[in-house]
Image 1: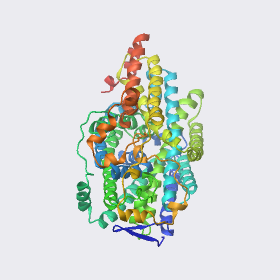
Image 2: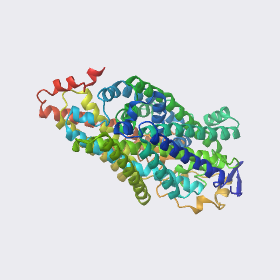
Image 3: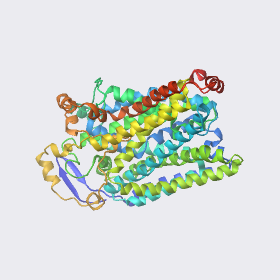
Image 4: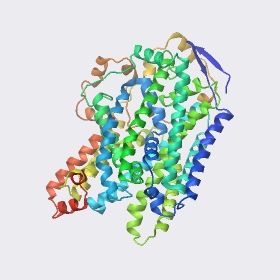
Length: 598
């Protein structure tokens, strides 16, 4: 650890670097993850069939599946983003937890029964059963595009933040995570992915709870932290403002968030594939139920961490003092500050971030292998044996893993374009949800309507997301608008040696907090939010008409907007084209409508 210390307004600033114990903790995480993969590669059927490799022979129980679903959702971007969000804007984001109720109950009782009873491996097989092969191929291609763009970013961005704050080499993190993930995903299949997710969930919780326990103790305890945050207006009440352009209100978080959660847990292959690996539909439904308290716990942990950060830095924010260059770095800077005298705990938190990245990209590798095998290779190779299918699935997982490393390199060269890449993950999910809703809820929907609806939905979603990025003005950061206290000004003028100044600066200025649920580019004036000035917000939105108002739509409505567009356009085209003869009778007979399932 570095011995350089600055005292500012009672806060000790020390640029801490990783020690041997911290590296050992991170290495232990990677070693255990690899061993889990090797263990599942050598036991049972040894991943000799595609069914075992992709669905664990449908033998998994609800608890590991629930923890795996939680880990996949809780990426490193989420771990860095949620506390930074609360640090900046207060606990208003906490209301997103309300969306988890319907966002998990709807998949459990609507989508899951359809997919499970049809015995699917790829969710997009449903689209061919309900519509035709063209719709299936389009749906699969859209998902592959979505995940490929996101994989490189979710691997590279946290590694860059870790490098900037701790000094750990970016490509050491990227290669270490990528290669370990490739090994256990390729050799152990979905069963290894699920059980490593269980282990990584424990690490994620332990890392964050350790930071909260130590830091809250330094500030007088959780009760004292809460009181101080409340006195600084960081404990938010319910904002019932119906304006859809408001970034976060009760409606955007609860209603808009529900569409995000349903798109993620109801139709995303990476999540649905875990349900399908359950030993029974009942176990799969229970797994969905169990995700609810797990997600609420993660939300509480993230919010508490953000509140403790606010209390510690309420007078002198590291960002305003130029100790960090973006909000993305705040959480790790806080961890290194708080845990600098406790060897091993900084390593535990970075292991927590590594766990978030591993759980997300391993799910991506396996789900991409599944849809490529089931939607492209099997239909073309009808005589493919299970053993050969398993072999090709492993090659696909390996190939997507190596591709992910290449995409991480591309992400490092993209600069601010990374903001657009992050937005794609949220933009694509809504239209895919709309495509499945069109098939399950509307008997009159035709293949032509589904195809046109998907294209129009994607076009509208990209128009909204990219239009916002290119046209909406970038506002002056709050750190440049708010004057610093005298003590902070003195400290910020003092050079501080260490990785913050010697490591490469971040190549992008976006904040992960604004991307980690339904990624979006949000140019908010931090000062106006922090001061909770209704008049300032009203003035900010006043006069917005036409496209400017359209581009101001809160990112939490993106999924709902995309889904609604696909459904409405799909129904209109289906009505114009006319119902195909016998289509209603056929889909009812096959059980492809929700009215039959429930």
